[in-house]
Length: 486
Image: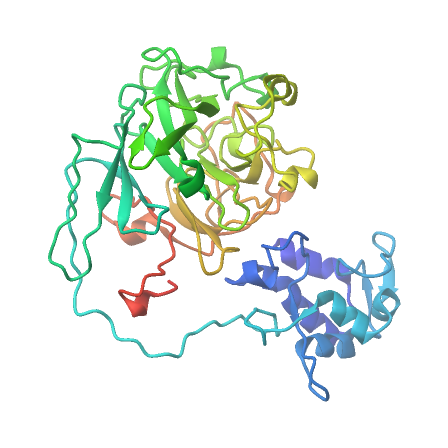
């Protein structure tokens, strides 16, 4: 609807030009839009990369657009014109770019170097190579515990770190493929035991584990977990329900017997030498009190290109996000945050900037373009992201599965400053919350990015009507070539 209204408002005089520009606008919905818009670039593109050949006497899509549109008039322009006309004024295409070479220099790009460009149709990255699947698949039970995280050891060996919900981090060795050996986990000899600090329950526990990109040199690693300030005095931080976001903790009722912000989300930094971790944390990176007892996300991971720490946070719970935290740009609930943990400000600077812990904010976070956003926010509009990953071969692809409310589970490709709709939308459908003490956000007030895929609960489990999404990973192993890149 938003794209259709944008297209109609342009009032393009030539039908042939209108058809081409309509396809350009609709490229936002392409499954590969992250590459079409070069989301890994420092510059934010408003128009996809149009296929443009440097070969003489060749016809490409960018040239077609110019040839069809150069004499057309339109209201407003495609962003990036040399001369921006006054808002809602009619101008000639030619007046804004002057020449085909200028236009295609601005918007064009080639796919010849392995990149992706838009040629007027959906992008296809089909692999024509025929691969044979493995002869079978073997599932191995690790243990009886509730394991939430598995991270490869940064030293490149076949060792892995596992963490369980109660708060233990364990180091194990993955047997060689085909050896017939099993993976052995010794819970009596943990790499690090945080069970005294971690509060573990249905939706609480050790939620995330991440190792610094330079772990082999600096030994820094990070754990994300929940704690109970009644049981652990060091579990103390600001409440996410506060006057800045239009929420009063005194007006919140207890949830599952717990008062608001009794439980907290924490990111703590630790240091390791060899195979042993020091039992005490080095510093507290982040601490935030939670309004309700569910939807804390909690995953942490480092960006493969920028080296920043990404922190996935749910909407804080309560049926239907009653305080509309996910759409509130001053709240960190229902958001993905992006933090710089290499430049730690002084205590006075942290207080001055009103930060939630020991970190700084990357200068290119979306708040640089939208000063209404809290500086930590990278993307917003999530209910409970579970889980996310970067594609190591296409690091601009940042995928998250987001758990739905009553009807829909979704998979999103996350980009800088993106709004993924909750609680205005549940997946692609408008959502009507049962109660709204925190107010509502109009669908016309946001520009949501809809899921690249998803499913209705009833389609998966008709008997119970629910099937929570788990995952958000790209397969890059050679074991099953048929799954590679999926």
